[in-house]
Image 1 (cartoon, rainbow, N blue to C red):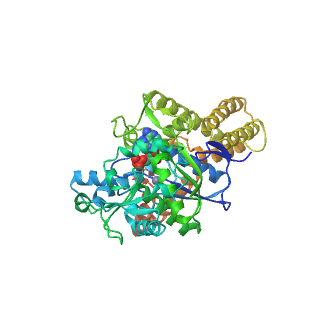
Image 2 (image 1 turned 135 degrees about the vertical axis):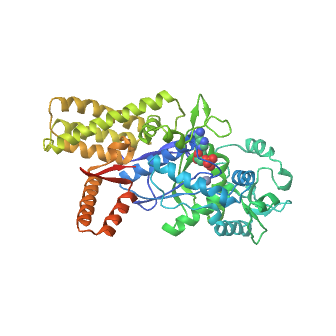
Image 3 (image 1 turned 90 degrees about the vertical axis):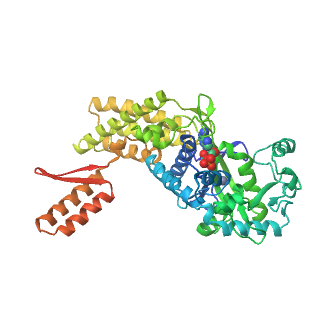
Length: 475
Ligand code: AMP
Ligand code: ZN
């Protein structure tokens, strides 16, 4: 079996083959940093984390780009409402996003281009589209993309022309455009934009980028820089981005480069609350920090999300989260048992447990190869826990192999309880540092002792000297 992924372009599950293996270029639309990202946003980012991790597990060398939308209608409005400049308003939300990402154990992308720091690339892209005659200046001074000049428009979203027209007519600035379906690439600077510092000079007039333009410019700039290409292997996002955002990204990018923009499009379904999309607008949202403050183990959130396929809507309930938490603890206990057996030196070699683990790994891969079927991968995992516990009860050998296989699967799912993630390696490192500090203190080298304390603190280890020795804990 090889990896097959659903492609929104064809509406089919297709074998995945990157342009230049083993490299995979992956672009995922990032958060709009006008406020805290909610758990719905993070369902999409977690599905993308699963994708990224499984590509890596499968031997690919992934270059992952996630943009930060730090200038758009919402960020400008929010900054004005707070009486701040755009950058002042968005900075803490960027910071919060990274903290939430780490809490949820999402692997950091290799590049986080920010819209406000990529204006030059956006201006160049608009100039190119103007030169090619697919963009024009409207009566209102904004620059628009001429959909009629791009025959492929609508291929991704499969909306027919009639539907597109109905949608676009709602826009209030329709009078300024040649065709009501055309969308803004560059919006002429308004006093409200100037007030928060969201306006830039450009040869075609002072203004600010449209949201769709931002993603085209940032993705093209980043893949040119990292990989010397103009075509992404994978572009992903939430299902609400198919139209118009991704449709418009394709139009702008392909009209500029004359090359396919992305070969594989993946879209994750919504996180709902009682059947309604989780959204700031509906007030039915929960943030990652809410959960963290409630002491929820991030592993439970991950497991909860993995238990529904990414192309199916998921209804968030407290009961389901609690259930996932129990699963996470069971898994942690199972791993602790395997570890205990191995440390006793009893778990070496082949045996019943090794056999179970090998079967699990085959099922796990087959499930994820099949369009990231994480629910099936989790079912295989808990089958291993069930059968493995029974084998441990009767003292079956093979724990060392099972532990290795389990840890390999955790590189993808990463659902062990937070406390159990403290692996043997970190423990050894802490012991080593504590011994070095003890030695320094005995030699009255307090400067070195303090330096080691800081080194430990940098990895979240807090220490306390007691009459019975130095105690440590993770903070
Ligand atoms: P935004 O910060 O609004 O630009 O959205 C960031 C990402 O979150 C996009 O990929 C959206 O498609 C996605 N998203 C927004 N709401 C939800 C939801 N309720 N469930 C899943 N994904 C969502
Ligand atoms: Zn985007």
